[in-house]
Length: 309
Image 1 (cartoon, rainbow, N blue to C red):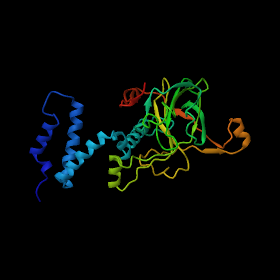
Image 2 (tube, rainbow, N blue to C red):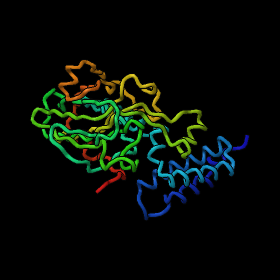
Image 3 (tube, rainbow, N blue to C red):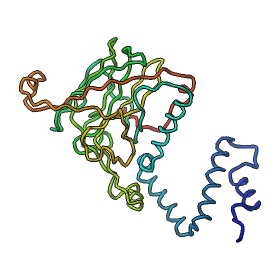
Image 4 (tube, helix red, strand yellow):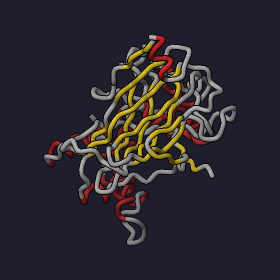
């Protein structure tokens, strides 16, 4: 049986050249990563007999992905973002780091610089007539002590599964706020129960998922960044219990410990206390932050995010 082409000295030398390994210029880390990726890709082409038309179809696909600005949507869809969470969990376990609230993916729809309030705030602008939701809790450290001055940055979709800024029909920063906790560590917000969403049906992410025989749906969820001086930045989200896609999330973000109980109140007395004349829902959820380590400071995630003035 003929030897694999990728195992020949000719191709090994070629890979060194194309990844810059034979030059003193450039970034050593970038070269090492490029060499590994290209080596694996060459092996994939040879092992699976990838034909030229298949390769160029993939090139066209990545061009389409960029034009549609969906690379940030595809990353969680193929499990890459969740894999980073699993890897960081494993690193914590190996280092003996006690974990607080589970981390999970950020997703592609965060917008920076949402309005900042202290203690309590309303997220929605009142135009979406979805069911009112009150969510509240305490930000604590690993010893259970309240963390004052923590910033709870929250964002979620409306009842159509759409996010403000990306959905031009919504007002600026609708369903997006930052809340600063007081000395008691408490936060609270009023909003509406969100809906889940699906990938754009005609977009490149869903096109690939179709090829893989997978759907592109997410359960209803609420995103959070929680941060405080001296503590690790927490990226997480809670899922709405009872959603049909709760354990079938195309982005693999559902994690145990992030599915709080949702209580629906229909008692007229409770409705009156909240100045409502319709039933409403309530979620209580405490966040637990992990103390900051030197490695955490080095591993701050820098990625291109939307910033609205």
